[in-house]
Length: 263
Length: 254
Image (cartoon, rainbow over the protein chains, first blue to last red):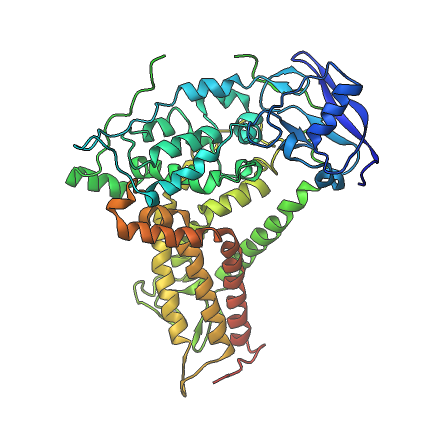
């Protein structure tokens, strides 16, 4: 694809009731991203095209959509990058969430899930009034802080994307990242394992790694968050030797799960 | 919250790339390996060509073994000796986090590829039998470590020829195989957890932190060594089998 060439964008238009794919012709420019092309359509051909965007720098997580069927940030997807996938180029809303209008989806389910997670619960301060932790022990959870909440991982996760009936009992990859950030934090005192197993439903994840593949921040969601959490659940529920060890020594005993915060 | 369903898109996926190509190597390799393993187990012959013992039959525990490692099972065991041990390394692979991704995609189509609709209408993941059983992976890891130790012993014995110490092509094949198997076993996610991943405050567990860091570095290549070690096991057996059958002549290097 060369600058100045015309391409066709096939954009999903509609609302919660019905919708269809509509073709628009757009003249390309050097360095153009999919969001630029959508804005050009909005400016010249379809002023009522609904879409979210904000920073245009891959940091606000607003412009998530499915480009040629792949969950992507439209502001970080160059037309040259996807040109090889064929013409026309398809842009559709995230499939896992209800459509509000066109490319705008209702992602409030994620905020409801966030409310179920007990907040960071640090240990009491040291006698001198400070809290101490070392860089090498928080490095592991710093990766999780990169999350921009674009919800592409939630969108691609087949547990809810293809089986929405699982939504009440499954938190999704974004919230496993959050739970891992707290659970592995050297100062956090809450016992989250029971919540990870029961309420967040980590057993539903069959670790097919699509969340990791679509993460625009490159967070190793499956290897560094979900699998380590699964292993912690195994420690408490599926390891007979550790169970016997806890019974005999009283060490590593689990306290009652921390209740979710009252709202 | 609004209705749970997303946009009514006209297809199971809007992906334009040949996503089905991703699962073909998995189907070919895992399917091929399974068939080859079944053949090796039930043919129950040509698994030892002095001084090489096939990894499918190691450790050989039955009295009827062509090369006995440990005489734990008497002559009453008339089935293939491979059946006595192979369930452990195969169980390790079957419950491996990496292979789970590969076969859930390729054989269960849950999902066949990212953003491509699942084939099964209902889905419970690993919350119910039989997939709840995946949680015993760490026990297969412990067993796999024992098998790896025996395979190292076999690799050492592969230097011992009737005429004295030497090196044959088979020695190098067995050495490469055990190196790949060790890399696969010790890069496992359960190993990473057991070595130090379970610790929150690394400042109070220096040794476990160093171990966790080392396993984490290996773990980044877990998928690659999973394939490489599986292929190497089959090729090592094939080499020893062909030598035992007299089809190939093992060349002595030293």
